[in-house]
Length: 320
Image (cartoon, rainbow, N blue to C red):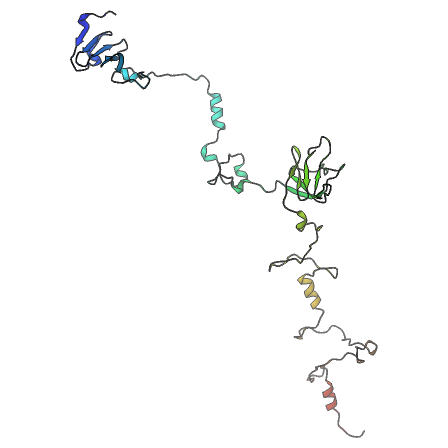
């Protein structure tokens, strides 16, 4: 709208308030500070002047930013903040998503077993997965294997993912300890495997696991690998030992005790169950004498054996 001379308000050095200029387009002049104030149609109070003609100094007391712009929010010009509301017609998908999510309390660092199946894992304080989360039976040793042209892979008819064969006996390369697969189209074509490595059967086929363990250095439970040095028990017992059957077999304590019961003991707690056989003259010991019972004490009872001294003492010297 047009500005009339009567609308101009001379205020001296005091800035007007928005309420002083009640009509959009009204102006006030600060002749001392050389500023011009006016009210726009949104109720914002602008000031121009202060020695820089044409420059907006403040808007409702808010100065320009580094680019010379005055950024206003509704409250800067006395307006109410705008409220946006939207109606959600269907929340079924949202509820389904909320029902499927895991709360923070459902994440686990340590597994208690099958009760935690399906729960999400959160790393521990060291940033690692707790050992309780890991199963160690994922790999199962099967047997040794020596790949060769024409028979590069073991039979997998009854194999399960995680089965592995340890490699031994390969000698085809110049160093005598590795083999390169040549079967065209095979899972390991062009790959090189060495003695001590492992061929692993998985859901995606064959793979190689590099090994630093020589299986031949370990005793096998099926007894197919013999010890190459004395067995060191470290002060511990061998338990559940079966009775030996050959002269080179180890004997159990029970077997040894049963054998000892067949022998006389020094304490004399065992009695003879048959005549004592001392041997005949034809079985004489070296030196020309047969076996003797020595160290016999004087007999005290009628059923005890007398020694030679007792026998000699029982005779009276004389002529018979």
